[in-house]
Image 1 (cartoon, rainbow, N blue to C red):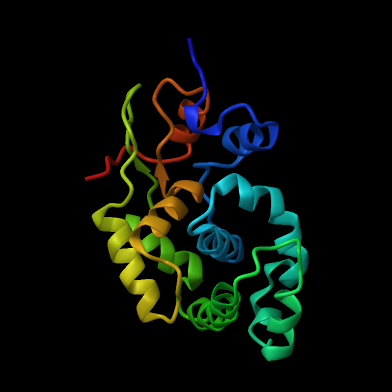
Image 2 (image 1 turned 30 degrees about the horizontal axis):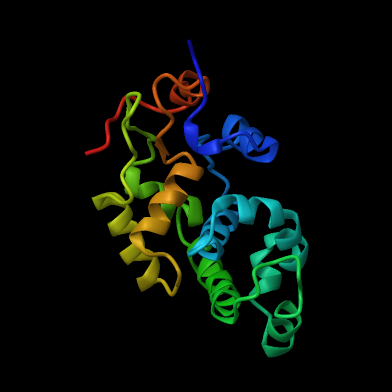
Length: 196
């Protein structure tokens, strides 16, 4: 009998996210940037907190359009710090603005931001093949390498645990349990590679 991964619990929003988004490979650079920014805001909080505010974040950050966000300064930071629909953390807000600048630089390079991100898995979603009772790792050598590369490019709030959660969310790795009802569908979108 197929069930869901236990982490999504019974919250309808969490279940929908698990069933429809988590682990599905994302190849659009701007969507990857949004996911990475949200993972950074999640640091120290639960992911459901971010999901419940995701639309607020999108509205506050101009639809996560890096071309707009990269132009922001102290006035926009001050305004965002008063916005109850997001996580009001100055460091994370300022890091998102700087990350927009970094995104634009990487997006202009061959392969774009998506190519940069996916290069860490050689362009193929990794299949962890987690059996019932197994726990996904908190970080891996791949997430550590991605974290270091992002930091070199000017990103913050992207330690190896955050980058691994990002990899799971964006489908660079399939960490659905093999007995999960989403596993086969997500695995079919990826490749046969195993995580080392």
